[in-house]
Image (cartoon, rainbow, N blue to C red):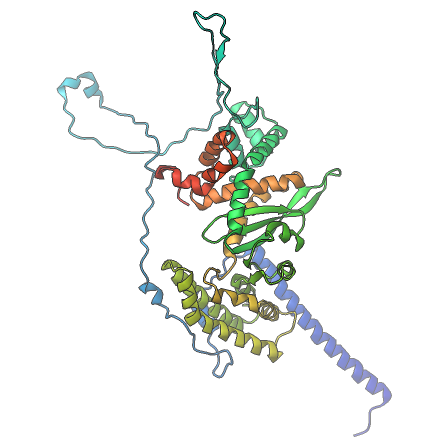
Length: 510
């Protein structure tokens, strides 16, 4: 066979380069298609990460000798049925505490000659009706008196009642209604202004409503601070952040700020407003005296914050974020990702059993040591093998999920040794949801200072929601009582304390 000419060698080299470029383009095209599919699922698909059992079984039909094919460790599929059953009471069709307006209807012959008829029974039917809310003028009359015989005595008049602000127009009930409308029902102030004018004939400019919101937030601030102190006193807190736009002074443009949510599982939670997402913000949220566990997602600011506090802060990771990333990689690598998702589901099944059995921290730690730790170790071994196999491109969804899990691994094991710590950070993420719904309606906060006022009100309403309290009833009562209270009495009017003082009819189903 004759040797190739220089020109033929050049053409062969160019062909090899073109084939390599084509292969690279195909790989990049595949990765881009995965990202587009993931984006479409996030925008238009179901938000649930649950997988049908039959679907997982299909995904996990692994060939013999697969390095991931191991026998699951932990409780059997039906072991949770052996726990104490929690009775589920049916909710009454209509609440028993609703006022009743009764209308008695008698036949016409009975009305004409009632003495000729004897009642032998009745048939009762009910309908649920509604009367729109109404404004009213609450007038306070303080009458003056003079002594009938002692004309030299000065006239007497009762002192004016304490109010949130001298000569203020809004009563506590109106303030409570405005706050619930904006921060619970997500009605922006301009919509409330339109509703009051069009349906009730009461003209309240939104600037006036904004001043009243500021007034209420100032009065509720001591309650907020008491809640915040209690959350940080437990030695374990979950933290997350969500972006919120705010209006930049001067040019009418918006900038991005953040609500930082802090949650104490089984207790209270609070929000804190910051104009950035930097690690330094956590120094303003977590007091210097705090020592314990901070649970968060994998955002690097939390690691920088913990490193800056020395050995006083231990970071705990979130298994929900790990599961989410493998769930997103299911279509690309259904067998491997499906196996890993299934192992994580074993961990969640154990936590469900502990929750249903109302296990305390010690029992949770013991059960996790015997059942959860072997599963966690098996997941780690699989991830290390997959990482070293070189079978997946670094930009692929599965490779990114593996890197994320291994990068967070020390924090993911913290919950095994501390029965207080949850498996994931979902509780604090759930607390953020009301703010996410609200910002879709009011779009942005008026200014940076208004951010913390919103954080105060959101904190109070969120803690009412956790205890199944009617936020309007709570706010109306508390705003009525606060002008006559001292700082020492503030613990008496937190949602937690207020809940204990109310009869059952005042509590709503959570």
